[in-house]
Amino acid sequence: AVRLAGPAAPHYAGLLVPALVRAARPPTESEAQDEGAETLRAASFSCLGEVALSLGWAVARFARDVADLCLSTLRLERDGSDPARRGAAFVLRCLLEGSGRELVHSAPDV
Image (cartoon, rainbow, N blue to C red):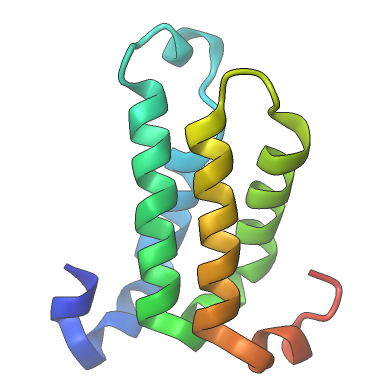
């Protein structure tokens, strides 16, 4: 859907990225009991990666939130959350690929 929006897509980054970051966060205890929670989380990471590739620089303003989510997932979640960890690695790659050097120069501490 983001690809189909074409040049208008960056205008929706402010809605898409925070919603996907929220959905990709670890589920609460009550949410974790839902058998679809991990699938939703992995799908959210995948969508976040696609958005980062498609929107490129428009996602850079959310770089800290996205990087914090991905790095904490990779560092802290080592038991049974392989799809989320793969998704986090994918998002980081897409973020760097989509925003490139501009991201590194604009947010060197990320």
